Amino acid sequence: MEFIATAEDFLSSYGFGSRGKMLGISRMLNESDLPLLSRGKVFISTRPRGLLSGFLTLIPSLHLAVFLPPLASRTQPCIIRMQVSDAVWNQGGAILSAYMTREKTLILEDVVMWKQIVVWQTQTFEERWNRIMKSFLENDCILDTTLQDFVKISLANYMPCSALKNYVHAPGSVMEFVCNAPNQKRLIWIEQDIETPARKDTTNHMIRREANIGPDIYSVWDTATKKRLGIALVRTLDVSKQLRMYKSDEFHACTKWNPTFEKWEIIEIV
Image 1 (cartoon, rainbow, N blue to C red):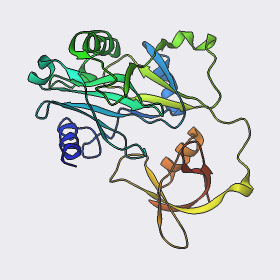
Image 2 (image 1 turned 90 degrees about the horizontal axis):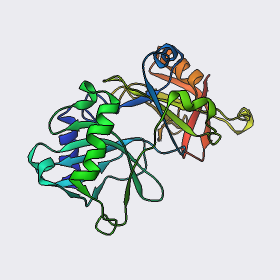
Image 3 (image 1 turned 60 degrees about the vertical axis):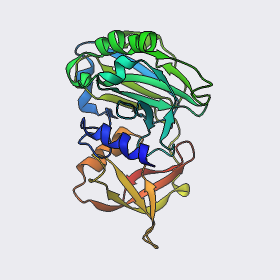
Image 4 (image 1 turned 90 degrees about the vertical axis):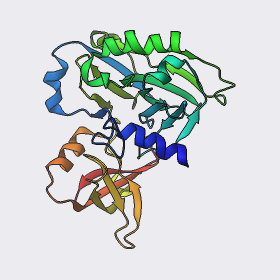
C-alpha cells in the first residue's frame, strides 16, 4: 500500500528502519555492557516475551499516523487513526518507538524524532519522556479508541535501576535497560529458562547472516530443500556472543522451535 511506502520513506529520511542505517533503537545486552549500566542513570522497562519494538510515524505530508513493526515481527503495518494537533503536523511530524500487544494496545516507549529533530541522539531519556512524550499525549493528541479502530494507546512503565533488587518479574520476561544518556540503544535482556532445552527436540539448520537487514540478524534455512524458514531467534547472551565471533556468514546450527516467539531459536553452532 502507498501509505506503507510513504511511512518507510519518512522513517528512513531520518536514518531509521529497514531502509535507514539503524534498524531500531535497541539491541541484545552483552557482557561488555555491564560497566555501562553501572555508570550514570539507568531505567528499566519490562514487556511480555515475543513483542518487538517498531516505530509509530506521524507523517506530515499525509497527516497520518502509521505503525511500522520490525522486520522480524508477524504484525502488519497499520494506520492508527489519531487526532493530532496541527502544531505537530505543521512542524515536521514525529517518530516514536512503540510496540503492539496482542490485546491491540499500542505502547509508546520513547521519542526518536520530534518536529524534524532526532531528539533520541541529542536529548536524555528523561527529557524525551517528560518534556515531549507526556506533553504529546496531554496537549497534542486526543485519544479515542473508537476512532483508532479500538486500538488503545498507552505509555510504557519505567522504574529506576535501583528498584531492580526489590522487583519480582515473570519468568522468561523481557527486560530493557534504558540509559539516560542520549544516543544510547536500549539493552534487551531475556531471562533464560531454568531447564536446558532438550537436545532430542532440536534440528540442524543452515544459518545465514543477513548483513543487508541489520547487525546480528540471521535467517534459518532448510538444509535439504534450501528453503528460507524466516528470521532466527537469538535468545541468550552466550549464543549471541558465539554468532558474533563466528567469521563465516553461512554455517550450520542446532535449532529448536520456540512456540512463544514462533521462530526457530539458535541453540549452538555445530
